[in-house]
Every structure is written in structure tokens, then in C-alpha cells.
Amino acid sequence: MNSEPFQLFAVFGIGAVLILVIGLYCVIATRNLIRAVIGLVLMTKSVTLLLIVAGNMVGQTALAQALVITVIIVEVVVLTVAVGIILRLYQHNRSLDATLLRNLKG
Image (cartoon, rainbow, N blue to C red):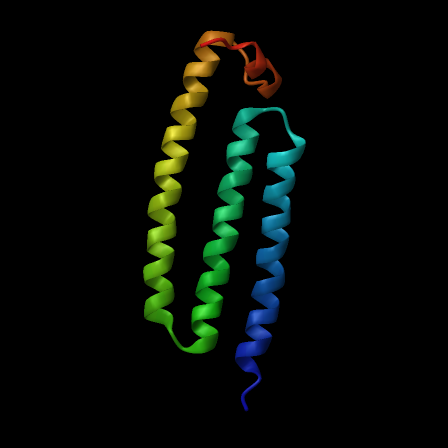
């Protein structure tokens, strides 16, 4: 049995998990909404990396590429909506602090 795919999965898997943890820390630890969106982008990038590596490991690269394209499209839509909401919140509050969201009425 060839151990090269397992070594590749171990190296890129550890890297993807580190990127995921950094993204999760950005989302949880910050009050700045832009930093939270950057953390969300980091988390989705780590998921795409894991999908590509897992697809390469099992020999289903075409399926992995199709899933990654779907994840990228969903990521762009979510990112666009989030940035639009953040821009409107900035126009209303003149701040990107997430704690000020509690003051919104409506």
C-alpha cells in the first residue's frame, strides 16, 4: 500500500486544521465585524483545502473539485451579503463594533 497519499493528507490536513482554528479564533475573539468575516473566509478556505486533499486521497478528484466549486460559490454569496449588512451597520452606527448591535431596534 502506497503511503504517499496518507503523508500528503497528514501534512495538508494539519495545515487545514490550523487555518480552521485561526478562523474560528477570529470569529469568536474579535468584536470587529470585518475581522469576523475574515475569520469566516479562513474557515471556508480550510474546508476547501480538506475537500481537495480528501478527494485526492480516495481518488475522486472530480467530485472533490465539484464540491469545492459549490463551496466557493456559497462562500461568495455569504460574503457579499455579510459585507453589505456590515456596510449598512457602519453607516448607521459609525462603528464596526459588534457589541453596538444590541442597541438596534426594529
